[in-house]
Length: 305
Length: 207
Ligand code: SF4
Image 1 (cartoon, rainbow over the protein chains, first blue to last red):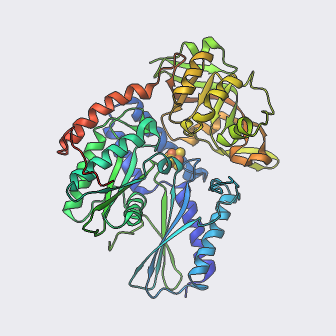
Image 2: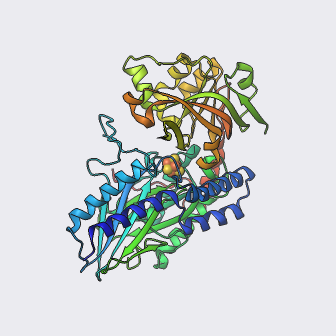
Image 3: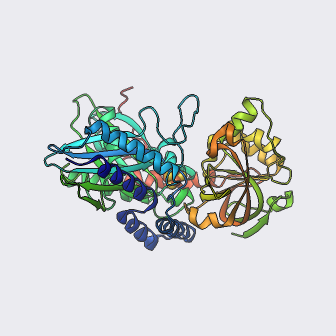
């Protein structure tokens, strides 16, 4: 049985790490992008961003002032037992978000959608968001992701049903057109980690796209060569556009293109995109049945697909 | 492209010389604003509780500021997308006599027209680097904190060579990103062709 104070402390530490420390895979992607950048201003911009992100760890301040929508992913062992159960896990996550906000690791960004009421602690109806995946075992892996407002609000996240008659061509056209429109003038804070969900109903595709954007290790490939090829082709295509960091021109417009899929109805292919912004914040921890907490360098969300 | 170090209050001649793509660093007094403030003033009929005559730079941003030992400390700062306040952009430039808007992305046509008339520029960051900026910003004061909350309140900052920012709308109403659109569109057609998608390709219309 994992005690409440153990998982509550792990949740808080994971939020803080996600908000203030660059993930190692994102850091590698930045180093590669700086090395191959041909536009001198973009090279400076990428270097300044990386420098600032590295300072955040030591200053313990957010990687970006927009600390985003707080989102949790729980990969739960089928035999995992939590003191207070999963209701208490979610309560503990809410308390940890409120505490991280009070301490300035998160900005009080969440507000009422109609009145604009600001609770001041990022807690409200259906926020934070929780997603579960069940696997064998008795441990739990918690991932915290922060989806930035720019990355989500300017058309980087969208959906279309593509006809079977159009197939991969239709999907790729939709992705390229959407990305160009959303990255204009740097709206989605490119270079992006672009997630693409193919198949399922619209919400399944949208969730897969978001998970592909927020949880896949940057630089990883889909194990199925058919999908890995789409990732590779789109990565090349989008980086040939010259949009660059914050839309000012440059060789890197995406840090990664990650595709995930679900089977779909014979009637059509739901296709969704989700751009994560360049800071691509997330952190993960594993808690085993004895309550031992281990920091994870990557979420392993798609480890078993 | 030229680089300028400007000090507020900005005069017409400070900004009319700026060309698209120039780099600017700014010093002096400015204020922060997000849409909630513009709604409060222009839609809800309130007036701005301070004078912008000598504070004619608007920074579109919702900073993180905490109070420590009775003093404000800026934790993080990053300009945010100006296009969001296009609805009140022209009114803001006109009523507040703005000479410079610092924000991410850019403004739309209506605001750019007013900026041309009133001689105002829009500048934007080319990195997400709060830690390279916060040491150049002194928090002076805050207005409408209780009414609008800490993020959407109007913060008064004193800047010390804050930058670099790139000029993306000049005082003739030209827009850097409009110019880039054409090049990107051409590259997009090539990229699609490489993916085997011809320029006249059309989706099967399902809806
Ligand atoms: S979308 Fe842009 S402003 Fe928002 S968190 Fe991401 S990098 Fe920061």
